[in-house]
Length: 181
Image (cartoon, rainbow, N blue to C red; front, top):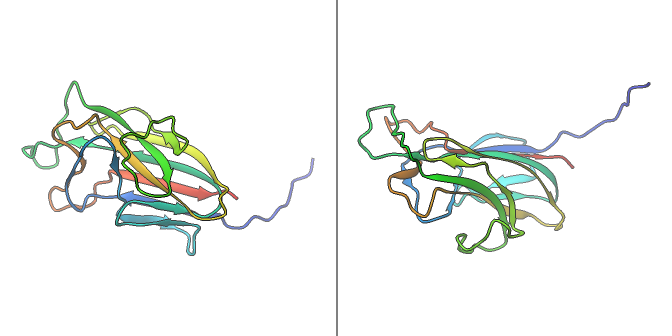
């Protein structure tokens, strides 16, 4: 048996993270995660992120995508460096979907063809919803996608981000994309 010697180009990849520069309550049903930081990215990548609205763009190709989305309770009265844990807790999950123009995400069913991946079940007790999927962009143009999170229809005191102790370094969501071909 001989070892194959093939040369491969460096894969494009990017990791975008949503830190907590400000507290942000959950509103309504689906909430778009808005990434705030490039954690890692290849220069001139085929992956882009718009930090004003959370849209992630990918060029044509095959991608492996993983990510997480977390929400938490926050009454505002927690001691420093603590979070409220509740039982029963608001349940929910994240989903990754493509789109061409912005539409109200609430009526979009998880069975809609734009939904690429539904995350694992999670609670507002800082249990993350996880995604792991593959996506092939065959359009010949850039495709946009969003990571969204819902924790019920509008439970009280549930937050997408919490800014406490002047620390913006609390990770509430992250997406990792690697172009395979």
